Amino acid sequence: MRDLYSIGEMLIDFIPGIEPASYIRKAGGAPANVAIAASKNGLDAAMCCKLGDDDFGRFLLDTLKEYGVTPACPELCDEAVTTMAFVTLAEDGERKFTFARKPGADTLLSEADVKEADIADSAIVHAGSCSLSAQPEADATVKAMRLGHEKGRLVSFDVNYRNLMWNDDAAACADAVRAILPYVDLLKISEEEVDMMGGEAAIPALMAENCIALVVQTLGSRGARAYFGGGCFDVPGRKAKAVDATGAGDAFWGAFLSKLRILGVNTAADLTEAVIREALEYGNVSGCICVQTKGAIASIPTRVQIEAYLAAEA
Picture (tube, one colour):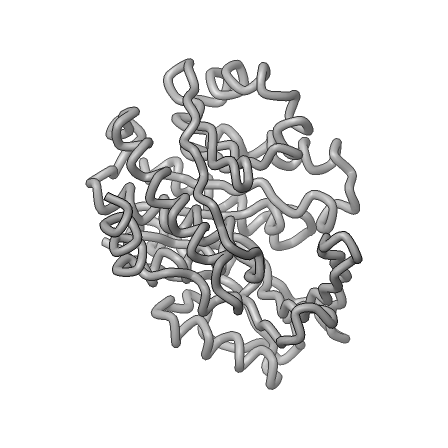
């Protein structure tokens, strides 16, 4: 059985501004980066997306293959469907994003691209909220998550990019996320998006209403907070010497899902507090290593690097 099947509408090219003075290319959105992170941690990962038949699309398709991710949609489209995000750094160090879609970019992931057999052959189905932000890719994402839920697979979802994909429309983002929560077992959410969904006090009711087994709230350098079984606990973060790489959050989640599989978690019933703590620790280390390394995809650490880091601290 395949470990991870990740769904995303597109791939993104991250182009930094003057600082740092390096050109970073990154498979974009949580689905692609999580698939790459999981693959680098020893999992059998596939990515379902569509790319344009152009130099950029071919580069991105080769990048997925290079890092061990099987493309579930390996054929390139006649129309260019790749998207770029131009990233500039403000004086305070904050990244500013501008999305630019190539001309003719109107053939994105469709429901037909999501094969029931692929879902059935996977242990975890993962998607990110950027895949819900527009039609028809939202239908493809919803179909994949619904199929995963119906077949008893673990369904993972990452709430992200509200300010980019919904033009900071919190209500539209929240509505789209709430619509798929009945299919979700593992929900990753940032502090900003927690507020959007009603705040921390609303999380237990949200979980109970939708039968969500675990909510992980990322807290940046402070680590992560896990909501599980009606309670919650914090796992401290790791000190990073620099914040050069993008994709640290995806490295965190990819490593977290990898550790769940390594620990033998196949259903929500297999989750225990001890297992969650160990997986979160593993993810925190992965994110810490990632931000200490310049580059994007290349900065996502491998299982060997994470375990060496933990061994050195023991």
